[in-house]
Image (cartoon, rainbow, N blue to C red):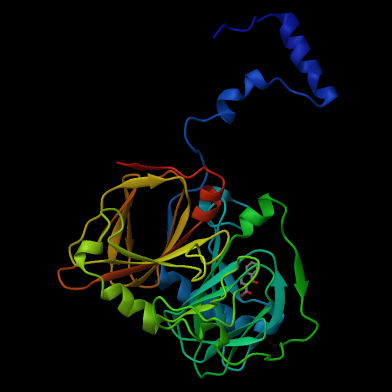
Length: 347
Ligand code: 1HN
């Protein structure tokens, strides 16, 4: 490329442009058109042993009623000042105590929950009560009314995942508080799960419009055996054995903007490094292992959460001789795929 002329005349011209609210593209083109995705997001791990005491302390100091949602946000150190775990995804850990209700509301950002600890809590989604056990995966899709409560005797903790930063970037956020604290239960408990408990069958009485998943809860009691029953022949070199929580009608992601997965690393298993043009949040559910992210090792055990920036090399390993490791994860893959911006590279 020819070098633009450097002269006092050019400098004066450039300095004068700002007053017209224009600028010279040729000064920034290289920064705009990076050969591959660039992001300030840092790989980061949040430890359960740090998170849990702080969350329980928040429960002594702040009520669910005061907080609306009592959540510690997992804030990426590369995105200071932003409510974001990656550039598109938000994750937090939420606490509900016996007898509490986190009042009903709805918003356009999609939300998912993975229950980490405690019995007796529930979420109500559009009039349907969904009791939650550790390991259950629960959806509150775009614009569905939702509240949480606990009828148990122990604190209940879960991981929240939302597309909040993406919604913010696209200025797509709408929010509405409920007029009452709780919704009327207009449907049978776990109504949306009826008919889906065996593979390959779909209820004939509901075919939802609008593309949202009709299934709002994926029970651990079904997900874990499904994962553990997979033979080695099902293993991917990059992920080990991996199942996706899908919309059963379309086979696509369970939420429009986020794909969620459960994966198993066998004792001694080490996966091959890869990078993908998606950002991800992982939760270690069982076992312990390591994920090597751009040469840096993140050591994880149950309850630890870690974030992987887009287009960043990562490989997992389970060093245990006897114990399986199970990871839950979610990513912004559906967005990148829908826009034709998904790429992956083996390393
Ligand atoms: C939200 O509505 C919940 O409903 C949790 O439990 C976390 C983070 C940001 C915005 C809305 C919930 C949230 C949230």
